[in-house]
Length: 232
Image 1 (spheres, rainbow, N blue to C red):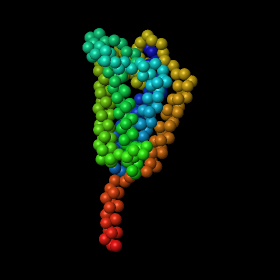
Image 2 (cartoon, rainbow, N blue to C red):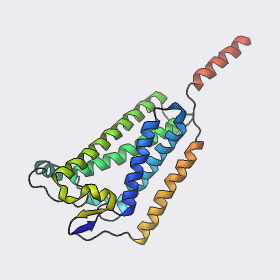
Image 3 (cartoon, helix red, strand yellow):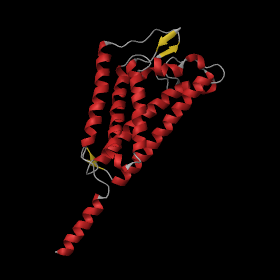
Image 4 (cartoon, rainbow, N blue to C red):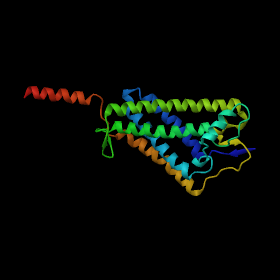
């Protein structure tokens, strides 16, 4: 028997986050694609921000109360992974921790990326050192990549050792093998989902007009000022 575990908004978020992060990470190495890099980074940030809200108002399995992150769950999951594992229709304990870390790291990675696009490297009147923000942003981006790899390895391991659960297929269909009741969205959750996917794309578009501080502007301005002083 199959149970609808992941509703359409959750699955759309999963794939948009995948595309958004992959694009932002790859484009970060291309100086002539900085605007697109920023746009995808902002898309990731707003997708995650709305997912965090959905974690408190969404249906079962997508709701944070269904994430078994407790230490006892982690120990039991690790001890019985290969022998007699408990069936988790939603996220298993390991996946729950990884997903929460992906949300937090991704959100702060996007936030530090936004700070780097502003001219004075500040947020809410709090100023930051440019080099520090760049270093933190790179650390967060690489941490995000490591967590994504951990997530992929977890899916592969679950498919190999617990293939009957249907985890891999559920990423596409939403259904996992189980006898629980299907999850359905309320009218409010559906309305929220519409806003969830409209707002991030609005900011994705607006990101192309963010005031970006061009690399080397400080040096260029300094040289020009030096010439002006010399002429005087």
